[in-house]
Length: 409
Image (tube, rainbow, N blue to C red; front, side, top):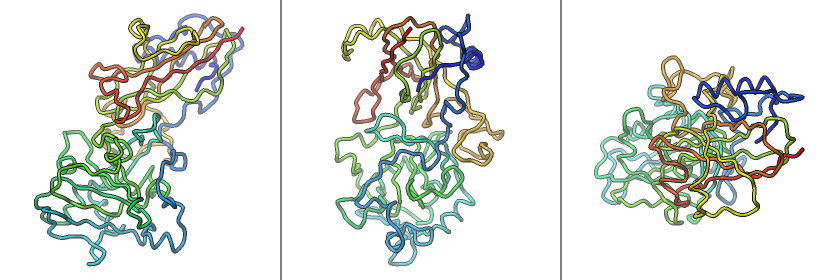
């Protein structure tokens, strides 16, 4: 997204840049002629409304299109939802939870468990085969390791795999898996995988994977299975994810990477400052800064091995601070207490937060008439610049993005 920016917004950006330790280009001296105030809400809300997430659902028909009796038969209503947990191979479960034994977990039982051990977490969903994040929400549920305690003693499980509704057609099954150590043990301060039943303070809508979906904080969306109904513990150590069988990396962590918002205009008037905006996915190594490279557009494509990359003049952009209004339809725009990664006073322990998105901006001013290319990239807290250290696109789309625009007299 890009828009002209007025005096008030220019002053705000200058103050924000000083806070972040950078000075945005062209905002130190001079004021734009005929300023136009920045339209309210030009920076999208931090949390995405449930209805506004990009949908990449699978199935024929897609499960969230079912209605009436078909919906109940698929166990996709709050009243009919059930979760089965069993063992296979050399892995055994002391107390299997099954439909046949009428011991499968229902939603009231899960909510009761959540009343004692609920977790809340801010996470962005991103498909590893789609560049920009699909949306970001406040997810609430119960840690998977707490749910497994209902099964009693577990013997010899090395991995578990899980899936959701697939219209009772094996060829439509979409399955993911986790190593047991990923389920049971996490580093201090990190969030374990959990079964989510609320999004932004409300029951998860069917279109977003409700009544219950898996949420794996560090992973791409294919690990966070929608419409969860089956968990199988196994002694087989191999990942059997559907995506693993399709040449994707089944153990890929989210990558730190910057993505440009869609620009409403590609031509701008000289003499007015402008702001380029976007989001950064904050992956496992965190986010140190967002950088941009502005250069004249020569009309030629810049290949990955072009020597110009080594001479690029990267400058620091501005990472927006925690918002006053978090959006997402939360009552009053404020976050509830008890969110993982926040203090008791409701402040984030780090910013930007890993596995969420950060809003960033690049203020520009005093550009001469002509055509331009703008590229953005992230630098993570290990010092790696995007797309390093994992440029393999089958483990997540993180190529450096470029936008072209012109400045006219």
